[in-house]
Image (cartoon, rainbow, N blue to C red; front, side, top):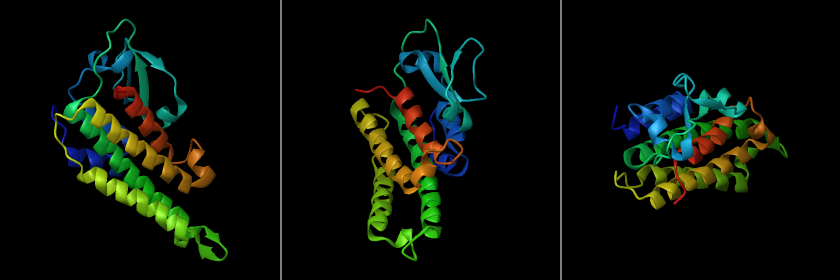
Length: 195
């Protein structure tokens, strides 16, 4: 697939996770020549033998491998449609994690009431939902500038941190599904050059 379908990428991120979505984003792309600063993040099953692994426990748990290609020239990273496709995957992952956070907050109580009903929590959930809707409706012009692409991913990272806080301490445990938000940020940082 040389032109990733954004809706499909969003669904893959939501239903099958970050690694499956990233596989669709990178399909047909040579990571060695495209990798920004010689470092790439790829689904764990797509590791060329000559690449040098960069250990990362959270990424490995999420089915992602970080690789360095010694001596490779720095590529441009993800641009255009692929940059947008990675954002779509991250939107899917973030939506799934928000649903898990809402479930988590529905069973936790404070003062005899579910935490999800507390005004500040309702506001935090609403803020993330609004951001997800805004990012999902954002223009999908393949000629997106590096600055606009970076800004989109920064907004996703900020929304991800808000969702992580909804899990309280559990959101920082490696075995918790919320690790997908940490790894999602890492993948974006690896593939998207800061303008």
